[in-house]
Image (tube, rainbow, N blue to C red; front, side, top):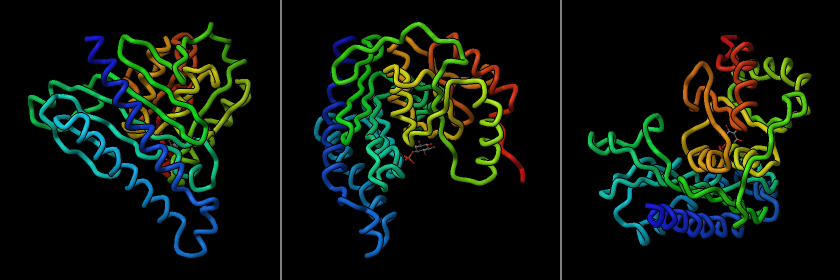
Length: 282
Ligand code: IPD
């Protein structure tokens, strides 16, 4: 029911804010100074773990019967049918460098098929009911409830009329493996001359929310994990946009393209032509 969805949105926002406060407040002024003492990456990893622990503890208190699927801690089944998909810090490289574009992402999903089989919910079959992407250093909180709209800091989001592709500001992200990066660079060679410009802001969750908020026209990315996009994709959908993959497939780790439907269709066609869903073998 709408009331149940609203309640899930409220829980998502409450828990994401609590984890955001921990992550933001616990960041040393310069993590790279911390790096000279031990390892900066360890500090980030420790904060990822602490954030996810906080989220799991808060959910156990507020929604004890729900399951949790987290980037760090994996899957814990629940009895209610609802599972929380958690990214404790999306944009960890930004976090490391003190760039404010990092976020905590929480999505409530249901997957009756998986529940009946006693397995973890599957991004290919789950339905996202509610989500929150909270960027504590930007004081930005995106929320969405299925059929209930999307909001940024409480302000309703609605995509504007789509600009032609040549006038689109397009966000993307890169993988961590050289063969994929080489292929991604090759796609950019063809794409960059055909659009207004490219942004690589460093948090896929925030990039998708930026599409909903009109701060990007489109976003495309290969290699996203379910927790990077579960909540943010609902924000895009509820703002009137679309998120999909190439070659008729739904959005997934092979490719996710987000924006207004007409422009997504244009970008999908171009990315298909460029083979953007393939990595280099070299
Ligand atoms: C990463 C960010 C980044 C994207 C990467 C993700 P993480 O998430 O969303 O923008 O390009 O593919 O892995 O690792 O910081 O949670």
